[in-house]
Length: 198
Ligand code: AMP
Image (cartoon, rainbow, N blue to C red; front, side, top):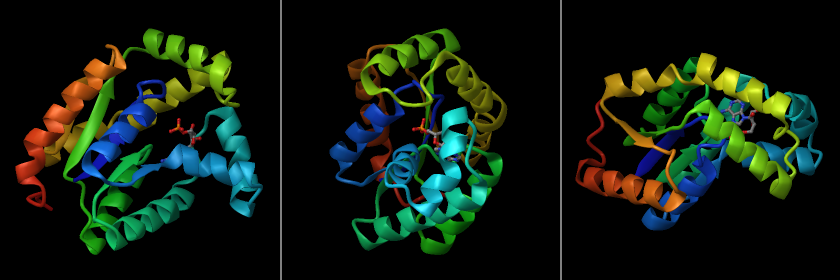
């Protein structure tokens, strides 16, 4: 099973991505986590992107595509499945990711979209801020991240719908209900896995 996730911040990508990965026995590739690890370890990449993360801006597409290519290569060397949480976030990333995945024989079977409104997303992110202390979970940066999502990331959803691989789930409900719907939808698609049109 190969899944890409498109969701606004606070919709539960990380939680649901982890559950999908455990259910199908596939790696959970969370791009935000990978980037934050670089920042924590003070790598060259980490130093160059720290400001983007703190301001709630997207890191450059070319940086992202190197990370996505590596993730696809690792997944290919393993079971061949993946759940990619956090990319693509721009139309250019979607197109470039598609080209890389096609070249490697790793095209996504499902694009999973999580829906929630900004009021609920802001409430959840502010609640998380007290627990996780992420530098981008402040009210000002949350507003910016939601704006970036609506303007730049959300349009990709229609592209996946056209490709016939979109699964859209209401993420306003408690996490267990959301995951039940997601796993049921993905299980229903299991027989189709590998049939994705180019
Ligand atoms: P997340 O953990 O998914 O909320 O991502 C946290 C931050 O990492 C985002 O606000 C961006 O600054 C950066 N980021 C994660 N994934 C991407 C991506 N695909 N393209 C650009 N920036 C990203």
